[in-house]
Image (cartoon, rainbow, N blue to C red; front, side, top):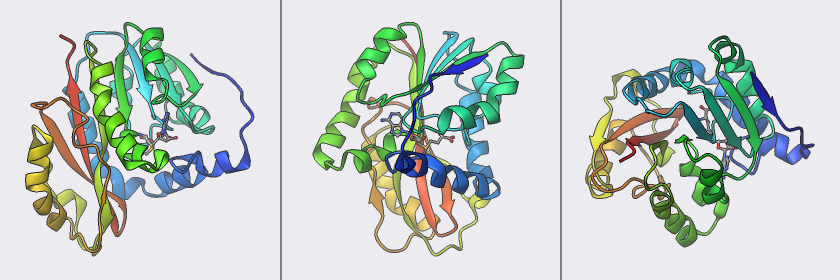
Length: 251
Ligand SMILES: C[S@@+](CC[C@H](N)C(=O)[O-])C[C@H]1O[C@@H](n2cnc3c(N)ncnc32)[C@H](O)[C@@H]1O
């Protein structure tokens, strides 16, 4: 069963949802499914190993769940999904609703800035594990202030102390020569921001990076020593991202 509150969105929200979602994102995601498949599989493999003890999930930035493994979602009894995109609830239900309903998963949708209100959300969902679903890499572009964004991203782990939580997010992204084949590029492992920096040149050359790449300021999202997996993502034919996925068990 699923529910969401009706709020009338503006045309700009429907199209771009603050520049991070909206109709343009969904059309792009829908058309890109074959090209993204290898990354979706990497994420599926990663999440298959993540077995939270709690039956509740706080899902942040889940959008329509274009890249979300249905089996992982179905392991929860309740999912509280927060997204600023007015289309997220309907499209998430379209893609995942029937499957989750069949398995008795209760999904509630909330249109809300979940990063600005994270401490409050954690209080409202005291038993929930938290999954940031490819949302943190957008923070610096939404906020516009690099220093503030980096500090807020580094501080998330302080708010989340004591929780089971995880994230997949952009590390860096940019233009490529369009010749790399996603399925042939291995994922990598790293334990710290310093290790990510050390391998960054190799990561970039493996996908045929050209020109200037964007740094998403997410290298210190996880506590140092967290085992993370680095996943290539052919966002566009010639514009790729390296994602980082990690999970922290509750103590
Ligand atoms: C790249 S999309 C995520 C895609 C999703 N993981 C999927 O598989 O389809 C990022 C999502 O995060 C949402 N978002 C960005 N900033 C947010 C915030 N501060 N609070 C809640 N949602 C946010 C956007 O609206 C967008 O739907």
